[in-house]
Length: 351
Image (cartoon, rainbow, N blue to C red; front, side, top):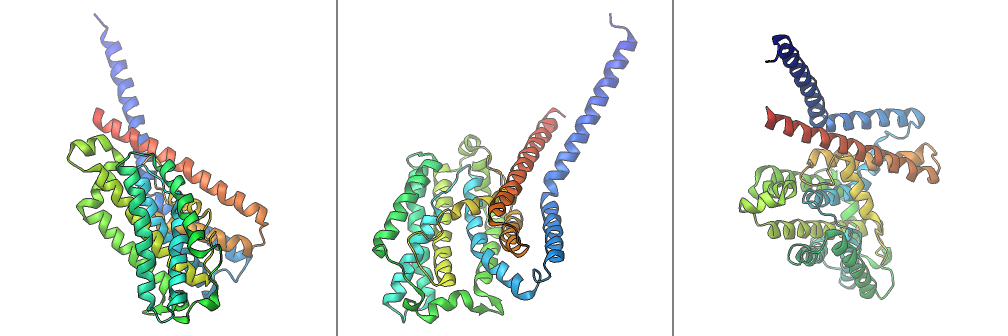
C-alpha cells in the first residue's frame, strides 16, 4: 500500500505540471492571437527608424508610391493565401501575369478605342483560364501543386513569347486610356489601391461569411475529415487555383498599365515575393491557417522594405539578404506559433 505522503507528492507534482502546461498554453495562445498586432508594431518601429534616417520617407508622395507599388503584390497575396491554406503552392502566377498582361496589351494596341474595362476583363479571363487548367491538373489528376505549377509556369511563359513573337509592347503602342488605368483615381483614391481595397473586402466576406470560404479552411486543416464530412475536396482545390488565376490575370493588366510595357519576362520570379508576403503575414505553409489582416500587413512590410532600403542607401547586395533574414524569422515564428497552437489543442483534449 502506497504511503499517504507519496500520494500528496504525486498530486502536488501533477498540479504543478498542469499549471506550467497551462502557462505555456496561455503564452502560445496569446502569441497566435496577437501576432498581427506584433507585426503592426514592427512596421511602425521600422517606419520610425527609416524616417529618422531619411525624412523624405513619410512624405505624401513617397507613401503614395509605396502603396501603389504594393497594390499589385497585395492582390496576388489574396489568391496565394487561399492556395497555401489548402496546402498548395502556385509558382506559375508570374507567368500567368505576363501572359494576361501581354494579351491585354496586344489587344489594346490593335484596337486603341477599346474601353479599359474590357481590357481588364480580357486579361482577367485569360488568367482565369490558366487557373482553371491548373486547378484541373491538381484536383482531378492529383498532381502535386509544386510540380503542376512549375510545369505550367514554363508553358504560360512560352505562350507569352509566342503571342508576342518575342517582341515588346511599348508605351507608345498603348492608348492613353489604357495607361490611365494605373494613373487614374476612383473617389479620390488611386485606381490600383482602390482595386486592392475592393479585392480585400470581397475576399474577407468570402472566407469569413460564406460556406465555401469555411470549407477552404476545412480542406486545408484536415483533408480526410473534410471529405468524410461531405466537402468536395476536388471542387475546392479547383476553385482556389481558378481564383488565383483570375487575380493573376487582373494583376497582369494592372502591371502592364502601370509600367506601360509588356514583355515576355514580365514578373519573372515575382511569385516568390507573393509567397514571402503571405509567410510574413502568418499564413502557414502547412495549410489551414491564414488571415486577410495578416497578408495585408505582410504585403505592406515587404513593400516598405523594397521602398525604404534604397532610401537609406543600403547596398543592393545587402537588400536581398536583409529581406531574406526577415522572412526566415517570420517562418520560424510561424513554426513556433503552430507548435504552440497544436499543443493547446492537445491540452484541451486532455482536459
